Image (tube, rainbow, N blue to C red; front, side):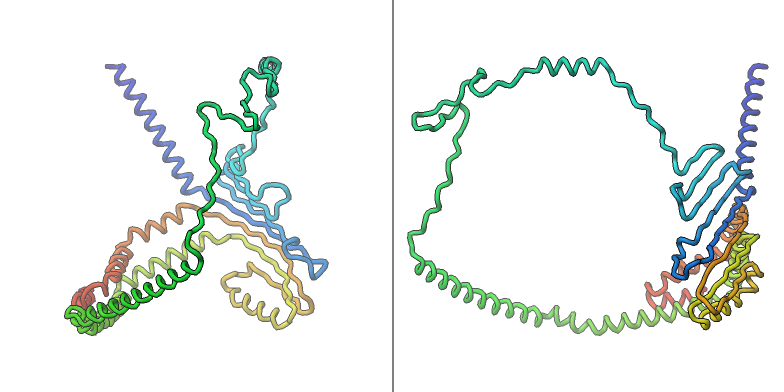
Length: 362
């Protein structure tokens, strides 16, 4: 009995340890942030015609859990990889190529190859081999061995006994016959089409087509009107208003969390036309309340230039994003709006009476 209790005790302790480790890993993934940084520079051009890609260079980094998992991005690359990923001390991306040791040649195989080459029989010339040479007749023709067949030369095509004028006459007569048959077949086909067109079934279908077209137009107009009424009723409901507010609040929260906390961007910009430079500065000035003096642009009106620096630092927690998605997924208002959108797709496929009932029920 004591042995059974000790075994159960050990099993319970191991299960608790495993559950604790699993819970610890989940908490680390959810609450330990991923820190990222970006350092970008655009050097001042010595020559105005110098390419921008040659003057720009950037380095991006991302780390998690005390640099145990780290990634690095470099642009442009100079022989090294653009993106690298390390876990502890192991590089996962790109993988290192293993150096293969050169295998020593096996002496036994070499000896066997040499013996095979020396023992290989030398091919004998014609006449020296044991096989008999093909026999020939006195005239020089080779006699066939048993089991072989001699290819016969193709016979020349036999010329027709009749002359060219007879062939031409027969061809003209055949063409006239074909033309007469084709005319008869065309006339018969036209008669059959006229009979089919004037049949009772076809005349009934022609008489019913305007009614079908009118019904389809009526259905489309009624379906469109029902959809408009359905959308109006949905947007005017309190459910839609609460779902909209929840969606906007969670989106703002996620965007604020993802945006970098430290951002310093200094840019010196000058276009070929002073009016373009002023237009660019005016557009950026409209975003100053959002940027909060994180981005600074110095205009230059007397020359065309572009250079500057950017230093960005931030962090992202997975728990914030999952919490926002969970709030949206389990919201009753969001579910109600999704069900109404499914009903909206079905409107117009049914009769107008059914669509009016759907709108009145909504």
